[in-house]
Length: 376
Image 1 (cartoon, rainbow, N blue to C red):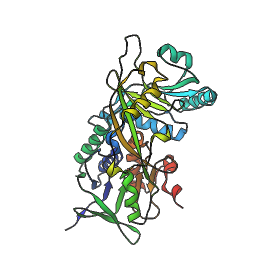
Image 2 (tube, helix red, strand yellow; image 1 turned 180 degrees about the vertical axis):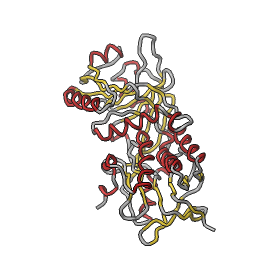
Image 3 (cartoon, rainbow, N blue to C red; image 1 turned 60 degrees about the vertical axis):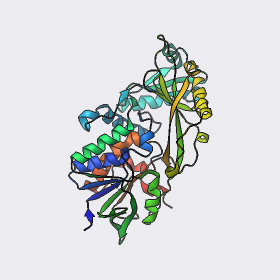
Image 4 (cartoon, helix red, strand yellow; image 1 turned 60 degrees about the horizontal axis):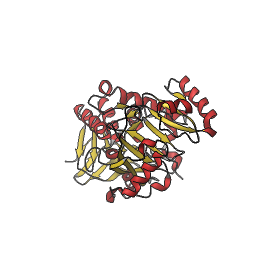
């Protein structure tokens, strides 16, 4: 006798688990199927940065809502997502100052809490800062980071407590269709019949889509983060998170004296095969990331590399997620190709899928992510 469910969610990352949680809250028979373990893919190595400033106002609004969920996790979801408030700076070059300040004012008017910090104020806070070509920065006081694995596990536990089945160590081989619509999934432990499938399988979503006549332009890119330790004197204020496209790096603090440093340069990433991912980061590469950040903050000059996180992004051609019903197969919903944005938006993605199931439509603010935009 075959297993049945109302909805099968493929993929146990943060996005898939958030979707399962929201669907289970709605009383649906949900089965989440994960080929290895919860948070084993890109979620497991994510720096977990949560912030809300984007040049696109629609994305900023979504990120703001996501941040609010992480800030109030225990009340909204339960369990622990590991949220830590550190603040976050987005560095702004002199050439972009006026446009940025105008954009900040417009986002503030929408209720998003941001501050413009001039260069001279930044220097007074961070005495070792090299301003160079910076006019200042956009500061988000409530931004910070979470533990991405704990977040996914918390969502999964909440979904299970509401009746969802969580199948760990079970691989989906193909999405089964009959007459142009979803009929179930075939796994390595047999078939599960259902009328709706949510493909949240990260880079593996492309092969699953292709197998049911709904190919997706998703590729994987290797991403590295260096972890460094630094001696900070009592006179220096600890650094918040920061994104600095001028210098080509981002960072976030961790435990005292430790920082995660990643790259914002395309040539530091390359094609990846997630099933055969090299999870090592060379000392040379770690030193290059550190030196890049040290040109902005002198305290990092002698920072000692003490670890790394190596993972991958599931990328789309335009760098935005694929999120919405696939018009080629009735009952197939895509939540993949997250391009590094997935963690910030996961709470909103989960709610939007639940709304789609109940109403048949996806909210307008998600329209930038619709699948149709990448179809020939």
